[in-house]
Length: 160
Length: 189
Image (cartoon, rainbow over all chains, first blue to last red; front, top):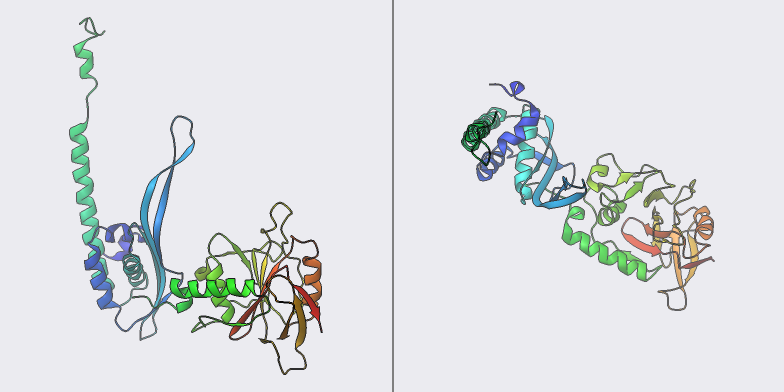
């Protein structure tokens, strides 16, 4: 699989399935000797999830979640440049930076992009496995309401 | 992993904020800027401390670089509507900033003026020497500014005429900072 076959919007979702320590180790190794400049201030904090209640359609905050973001620009010693960004549900800036680096490496075809692509493929496989597992669980919990017709009403009279 | 200039780091910004509070409390006193940026203007250090995504900024004289904007996160705005306005003090103003309303006088603009040199005594013929009085000043004090077009002082009088409406000024040179809040009376000498 080449990275042109995987949409950029799916890179981050795939990479978040990989243990962050593994990803950070890879980006640390790949980025040695590169100039990495922040394009915005990397930040971490809490995000608020706002939803509308179903009765009155009034907004309420369901809860908070950790969020970290980074946007950076890489310049390699041979003068290649690439920009990458990431926003992840994690309270560590370093994790967002590692994802932003992967995004830049892949988008700019920088040295090591094949190794990052392998990670993306691995992540996609993990995500697919999780999706199938959830589908299986969901299938087990499905209720066939048509069986209620055979039971009949409260007096035991079968429904028409 | 990422190398951030100290002006974007919380500990430096806290020191800079403390300095700004001190400068606002003691109008006309000049303070050495806590963190000089490695790359970019000194004014950027002040803006980095004050701005976030909730406020707007105007840069009519194009003193900022394109790459500074996403770092500051502030929304770009016209000078007439901006919360903060960065100006070159050498150019006369060609706008009227927000001066707030009687109900919300704090919803006014803060001007950051970049000048050549600030001090109590400057040996420059073009420097404007002024006597300051008002809250935060014991009796009176003297401030000299070089690289400030006199037109600024004239329009400031109009802007602060209807106290509590008005604007607050922060002035920076290459290494120092001073403030002229709306409560300070300025008399050219």
